Length: 72
Image (cartoon, rainbow, N blue to C red):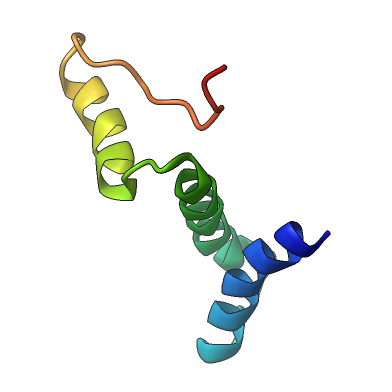
């Protein structure tokens, strides 16, 4: 449980600093981004490179869409 609580801490801190969100809809985008950040960290993936890959995949068929699933 401690690992999960630590990962949630960043989102809780951001919500407190930013004054929360007025609706679940407004909170969804930051929550999705925090999920990606917190999933890339333990896998030692570069967040910038990870976010760059889907944009390249939309423009060029040679690039693949990345996955957050850890490699076996």
